[in-house]
Length: 189
Image 1: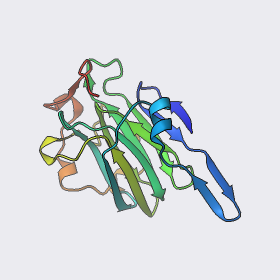
Image 2: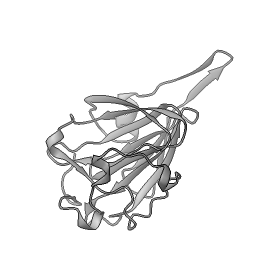
Image 3: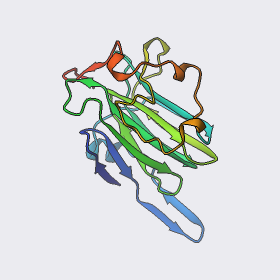
Image 4: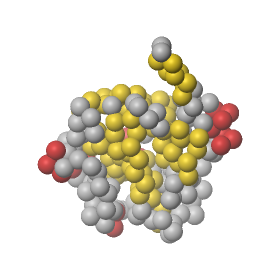
């Protein structure tokens, strides 16, 4: 696998080696050995999958400690713009984000460490999105920031009038108004 470092330390794009021929393709989507040696040691404990249509935006979500999560995300059908926002107070990259297109064609994966808000928007008619988490889902620890916070400057690549949100995702605070965020020096792992 090819690991691409991004402008924010710890956030990485992973490109698997894809072997294709007249029958189709094959790739190893996850190897604990390779991931731990080339990215970081992580023990994933839960796999999730969602199906969404064009314009659906899920995010920007995170879980508070002790249930904070790192995620390894990928698309198996369609395409998304996937975004990680640094919400670690005191971080030199606080409030900055990394955005990457993940698709069934590029097979890219995106590693989002603890201390980041995460979200994606669907760019195709339909998407099937999968992700691994290194901590279990805990509804009592949910946190989020507004997807359209102007201070974040995220270009979601979908017109605002085409964005489809859950009721909950319409009510999140801007980053500057968030009551709870991570501390940069916290031991998040």
